[in-house]
Amino acid sequence: MGRRERKKLQSRRTILEAAISEFSKKGYKETSVADIMSTADLGIGTFYNYFNSKEDLLFSLLGRLGETIRMALAEARAAERSSLELLEVGARVTAKFLDENRFVMPLFLSASHHAMHGGPEMGGLERPVAKPSSSRMTPQIKQVFTEIICAGQEAGEIRSDVPVDLIAEMFHSLYQAAAFSHLEISFQENIALKTRLLLDGIRKRNEQPSGE
Image 1 (cartoon, one colour):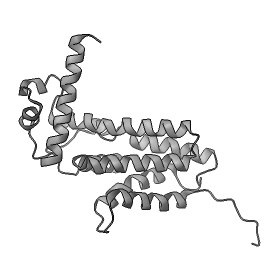
Image 2 (image 1 turned 90 degrees about the vertical axis):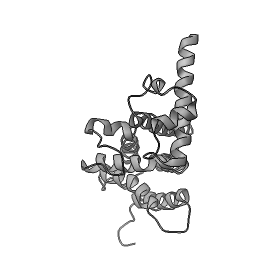
Image 3 (image 1 turned 90 degrees about the horizontal axis):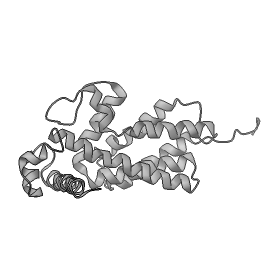
Image 4 (image 1 turned 180 degrees about the vertical axis):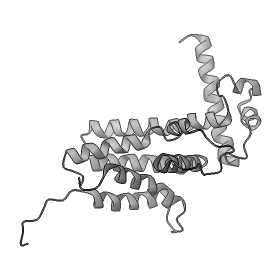
């Protein structure tokens, strides 16, 4: 990588880190491009060399979630974890990311709702998001969970009498339920407990002999 490319990469990284800082302090909606670039100590015009809009920048930040999940799952697969354990890892890593980047939560929930129901976006974005962009919001997270569930059913680890899409939808619903929960436990603990209950429900059990 040449000097020019390294400089461009560093500038992009600086803008993303500045955005995380500003979004965390003010929230996505209240943060302007000017706020981000002031924190990054770069000119506003530089922003548009890397991102088309503030929303585009947020999509890039959310892309980190997808990469984090992929890395965690790669390690778990290398350790030959079961499909149920892979689902637990995915749920835990997602919960940690969302807990540490709360400004992402509205977009994540909005994208999950849109992907599952095809309905209108929610979550307080400044303008509607076109349907083709919805896959960028969730970094194919639903697809990752779906693939693990399918593999688990084929391996006889996950119940096959429940549709794959239904189980995947249930995993997405965990985050919305935890986000609006009034229980006096942390967000990550809430997700962990709900995940255990869900995994226990989809676990395939050996059929008992008749008469027992």
